[in-house]
Length: 631
Image 1 (tube, rainbow, N blue to C red):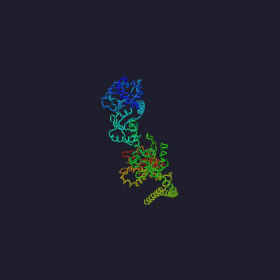
Image 2 (image 1 turned 90 degrees about the vertical axis):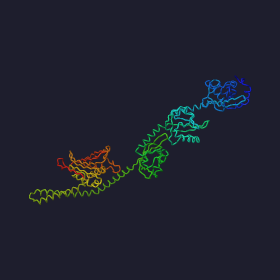
Image 3 (image 1 turned 60 degrees about the horizontal axis):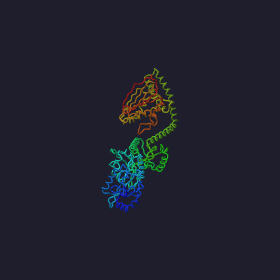
Image 4 (image 1 turned 135 degrees about the vertical axis):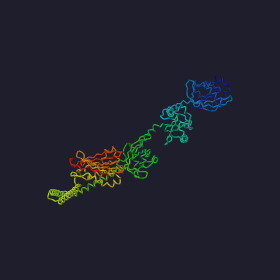
């Protein structure tokens, strides 16, 4: 059927009123009557479909529709004419295609408008070839599909217009279940109100940015489960208006890693402070709160200089810049005295180790801060002890000459004393002496021995170690206990003595007195109140005297036994220099003896120090009976 088959009036009216208008249109334009026949076509139709106007006029519109869609097309046309015809796109939401004369297909976009004529209702179809745009859309979709994150594109009403396959995987929805729906379907309900306000804010100032900076964001899966997310927003400007592209990343794995990192940070024994390049504190642990007196909230986001005394703040930014220029593990301020500043304004000495922390957000510095106040105090004590030792050595040099004089006098006394002993011994052998004379001789012998003892005691402190004297261990122990007697009574400590021998040893008495003084003092400290201190002396095989000093205190942990005699080691948290037992062992070694220790914690047996010293007399000598005493 051709144009000659159309009524002359109809063709003439349309030609007269619409030919010029249709030819001026940028799109391919068709006028179709209610029978579906082409009444008018412009030159753009000829170029687009490859038909001449003569070939199209009077033909069914289905000649331009691919064969697979032709059966449904008359029904759509009838539906358009039967309702109230109005301007609208054809096949909204569908993929439309046209078919050229050569049989090739191409994507089209069609707009329909009703046309009222004297001969009845007709429809004007504007047909646009969208091959180029479809190609661009295909590229965009390909890029969208290749994105590692879930991509959701939303219009200004909050309706989802496009998603990628990663979105389907992440949220558990099929694409068809999301397109056209509100984006709030992917957000937990408790955040809906906030999200609506945030969307309005974005469209008022559309620019690339992260969503909810500083907030915990969550996504909602189809099965109702929530998961932490990170969202980046970007505007997309289209012919239909501005859209927003949301890149959504599942943060579940990173949150777990963050939790592990935070757990490690909290388990650290030192205060840990993490700082960015600008010097802002981004993370701290509980030890930092305890050490500096600030709460976590008072430090996060603040300058790290807040923790540094004011006199050092001017130099600190330069040191930080130097670290970030060459980030590596190292101590801070080598050779310098470093100090921290508490919230209350007090300062304290610190030791700081710096480590770089590389993250997705950039490089940070981790500072491990240790309070070294106790160590500084111990160092000062050691320094003072060294100074005291040097002063004592100088004093000993001054006393040396006096000591030699005293030793000479004592030695000169010993010579006549020996002569007197001999004379008195000979008198005692004289049988002609009566009772009174014998008593006088006995008195003279007693006083002579007392004079010899005085000389020996005067000489002992000034003898060299190679000139020891015979000393009774029991007497030294009793003297030391007498000194500590007030302290024992105050602490309600029961003293138990068990002496199986007086324990004569050849020693420098003042040194052994020092040993007993240190051990008894330590025992009293370990016992505290209401305990027992036991002293024990016996002769053991091998011509040795064994002396035990045992307390009922808290005991020494097994792992510390091997190190208690090392210099400066101590188990006392609030006192002690760690030198006492080191001195004890040094003296015992010098005296040719040895020292052993046994200890248990958690019970009442406490600690026992056993000292073994060479006996002054052979083992064949008769020892006195054992003496026991409890006070």
